[in-house]
Length: 178
Image (cartoon, rainbow, N blue to C red):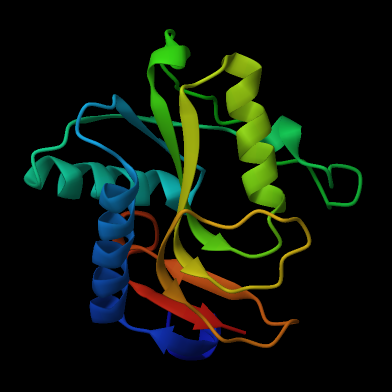
């Protein structure tokens, strides 16, 4: 996808890599080495980001589990959206109460995705605690949910749509606003 189709480029691949390292550093600052960490990516790009975070944590000597959390049936806008998202499945540990679950997503905006992800995790059990990490925080909360770890804070108009592109999903990297 070229810049003209994606919108205004806010960050290139190098910027995404730097934001990713800040996200990892923020997560490391919120956990202790005795905790059992499970990274749960929120589809679609949160899953790719969670895999990247897991690799970066492993390089720092921190092991983590890795899975996904499907929020499709926990959204509060099901009746307002055109079509229904395909169910993707959730992969969480069976002994959830022994884990700190770190939800990973690409962009934080209203807080509604975070709320849905928390509900999806709690439908499976009660983890030791839940943290929330995002690559980009664009502001505009409608719910009082803020990330525990953030790669970058974006300044965009309220009506703008922010899109993260990752190599694993999109073939290229960047953050765009349209």
